[in-house]
Amino acid sequence: MKITLPPPLTELPHRQSFTQDFGLLLKNQLRVFWNNLRHRPPRAIIAMLIFTLVLLSILVSLGALAYGALKVLSPQTAQGFLSLLFMGGLMGQIFFGITAAFAALYMSEDLETLFVAPVSLKAVFAVKSLSVMASNLLTVFLLAFLPGIFYGLLFQAAAAYYLMVLLVGIGLWVSGTAIAELLNLVVMRIVPPHRSKEAVGFIGALTGILIAVTAQIPRMLVGNGQKFSLDSWLSGHNQLIQVMNYFPWGWGSLALVSGISGDFLSGLGWSVLLLALGVLLFSLAFVLVERGFRRGFISLSQGEGGRRRRRRPAEAGAKKNPPLKSRVLAFNHEVSAGTASPWAGMWAIAKKDLLYLKRDTREWFGYLVPLIIMGVFILQHLFANDRSSRSSLITVLIMYTVMFSGNLALQSFGREGESDWLLNSVPLAGWPVVWGKLTAAVLPTLVLMEALLVGTAVSLGLSPSLIGALVLAAVLLSMGSSAIGLFYSINNSRYNPDSPKQRISPGASLLMYLINFIFILVLGLGLLYLMPPGEFVATLRGLPPVTYQGGIGSGFLYTLYLLSRPLFWAPVIRSLLGILITAGVWSAMFFGFMAATVRQSRKGFRVQLVSRSGRKLGKIR
Image (cartoon, rainbow, N blue to C red; front, side):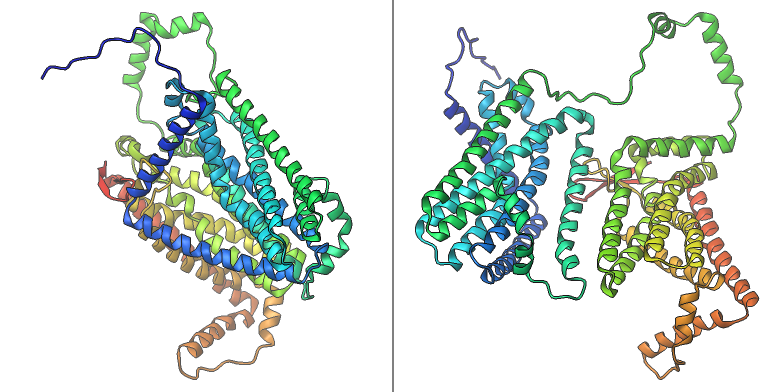
């Protein structure tokens, strides 16, 4: 087959206008989006439909809530409520927009290709900015357009009012996207390219935490048992509402209130002012982003990262061409060197894993998230100080204790990925490898468990004896749960090149959580016998005796009653029973799972390689 190449170009191709380049890139972006949507698996499409139905239900509930809140407010008092909604919408656009802008402008796979294509750079960044605006559409619709429309329907506004709603919504939309891109410039300047995925994870987790905190605010306001009146609250904070008038979200509320009151010229002026501010901020962000990439202020090169140590020229030459005597001595030393100490090998494995946790910020931030969320629930309890907040705090504490006490060990062997052959071939395979993994898993887990258990106990104002029991429980739980996690990790580890966080099979993870939950219950019972809290024993003394009357519920209550009886025994007998249960259960679980893990390590462990769709590709030895 003969291939005929076209003749080389003798002159530059005809330069197209910005409008033509923008239309071409926008069509290409929409075509890529449609192709990705069309080739999604059926499970993803079903998940998207479920998400759409949930989203519609949220829209209906939020609409009913906003309509009900506006219904009890006067037009002037509703201005403060609209200001709060617009402020929340602007803040939400900034947080969600930073993540979207970071992904579109810093992690995009086609950005370098578009830079060398014969298209205008301004058209490239215009399309990318449009994709960032599209990601903020839902937020601005819920917190800007929807309240304005309901406000007009409630007070039967004229048709000109909805023009102001459109101008205010577009102004807030453009302003939020522009501020997000400006902040994203700072993030892209600070974060190196090889840490881009970690930065997206950090921003996403921070956004989720802020959303969770924001969702708890209404509950904190009404958690003290008193009836909360939005009208009274807004009237009592009139000075705060007046201060908001100096900010863009206050301008939007002033525009809508003026439109409702019949002052259309004033409302149109505030709307145009907000829209002009949005256009100014967007123009500034667009120019800075385009010049930042064009002049090298932002780099897309994927460096290796880490600190680079400079060598002197003489040392570099000596390293490259060492003398013959040095090479012979080094060879003789390698030949005569014996097997290293097992303790040194154990520490080498532990140090390797700890350094990995230090380098990958997604790992340690994954353990900061439960601490931050627990801090939110603790603040909620201190603010509300009722039975509901206390029960929520204890429920979340138990759930996090079960999940995170052995989670680091559960992912330990799967973290090796395609390099698991190294641990299978080292001379010290067996207990040095397993105990090294255990050391690396226990140290961070112990810090987390002490912070969760002891910190929560101190915030609840528990007795010193119970706090001491929780200190001991954190130590025993960290070691025992880590041993359980290592056993399931070495037998059920997997590696997904497209998603490295998937390091364990789901079934093994659920089974480990179940066994860990049973271990926590039995260990807690032994510690309760060993160091019983005074307030708990006093509460049990006031309860009437329980007898078995048949049925599962009665049997469960009678079992709890029998388990509580040793708390009233003599202190010596009760303490001996507590030591026997605690030491026996912990020793059986810890040494039993560790022995099974060492046995499997000597045989060699395998990491299952899976694809993006979850299909198994083969075994890695």
